[in-house]
Image 1 (cartoon, rainbow, N blue to C red):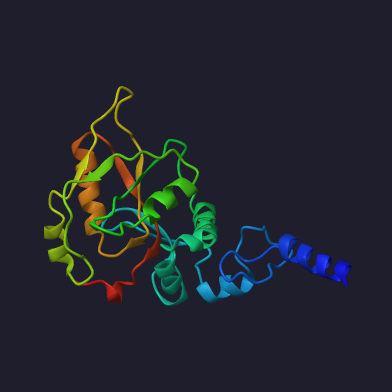
Image 2 (tube, helix red, strand yellow; image 1 turned 180 degrees about the vertical axis):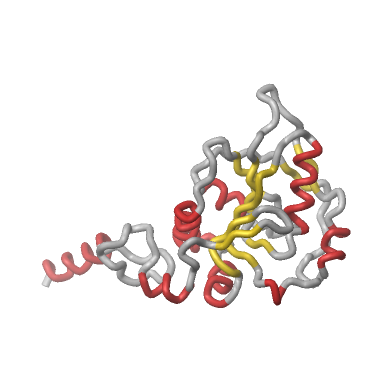
Length: 214
């Protein structure tokens, strides 16, 4: 009886679990990878998503369906393993240049700030620099159209100037979701005004075109 209980406890501790659903992980998969059921449910494009407007960007998948539901949960501390799994997939789909420096976009919220951009940047395993800070808290962007978002973000960011080593030549902004790109454009403007060059933005989800407010 005791041996059976011990074997059962050891199995629970040793058996790899899916970081998203916590179900048993398929044995051929790495222990940090999502199970095939979760991967099928998320329906992530094999090569991710890429675009050039309103600035060069890449994303793990469209901010819709099961990926959207998962991203809404990721700000909770207990979802750390799920976030790490998605960031690992992101790093596998997009290989950044050796000179890339990641700059997380600071949250605009006065309270309950969004921790995801910084966690994503740290998880990608590239040099990270906190070159941006908010000069003020803007209004919630959720119900604003494209023009209102741009106006809301005028002067919202300030970038730290070049240090003794000079400007960064390949800055990649990091955010959790890209919608109209107004936030990223405002961040890029602040960085480039101080001499840094912004190569693009990397994120987990890209809002589908039909859901972006005009």
